[in-house]
Length: 434
Image (cartoon, rainbow, N blue to C red; front, side, top):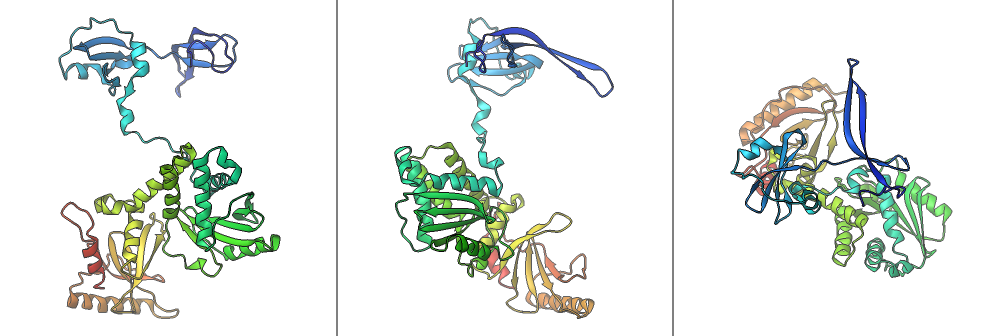
């Protein structure tokens, strides 16, 4: 942008003095005056004029020390065009020998092409970090599928082919070859179904998008019935799209939905990038899913004490490969936790639950049974068994009296390396003792 031309109305910009007057809580007023560019046509454009720093020192011919307002200093490396982070200029002067500045550089021009060193560690803003709702994701899926229609091949071939790849994954999941997509009609919120896509007036793709939630209330079967009533002759291809993970997908079997998981979508997006897709929306979504995948896998490379909810989910999924259990989020008044639970192999009267770093033995009395008696006898039995088999269980700090009660616990079941990383093999071996 030419700094002397208004970017809105193209009129001339003029330098003027501007001031903000603000009232403080105690009734005093604060006046902040500064130079600003103002549109001569008075279209409303205002921009504070950035002050040009003063050069107050140099180190040879390659480094300049710049002085900004509020006594902040920054080092500018001329050869590499790198601008160091700001700190008090006296601190910079005290860290190295600086000569008196004798040059005649045009600082504004140098700063115009300089790279801020802080940018190296910055993560680029991602659309989907903010558009996290299912509706936002629905919009992306609709946008991508729209590109699969054959005429769009001439406008952006890599993006079109990536869209066809996505459609192909859906068709192939239902054991059908993907056709040439001559026509496509995309509807959102059809009878409460997230996305309905009609392809070539022959196929109906039903997409129920569950970003971080689960299906409920027989909704999947109802969606199929609604589509059948409206389009009785179309071949239905129902898909349950899920970028987060869940313990199992058994509820999809009866209504005939195929789970389309994050890893499947990552394959589509990564192939698209490899084949030349450069669309920023496409690449933002790819990066968004890669960050989730990185979080899920982080349990392998992060110390246990640094695990977040994604790491615990990844750990529980790894346990599922060896232990027949389920996992999910357990809410409670203190904030909730991620848990993994399974039936004890040695005693069917109990079930075991991992509450992140704690292993709990739990019991669930039948309706009408004396809870206190059941709890006390169960605790006595399990602690005796623990003593006998060296299971390292102990009495819980607090005894509950709810529908499900903890009767023993262990706080050190996780087996770790000397670096604090999880030792999966040893941890699974430890859990199988129970």
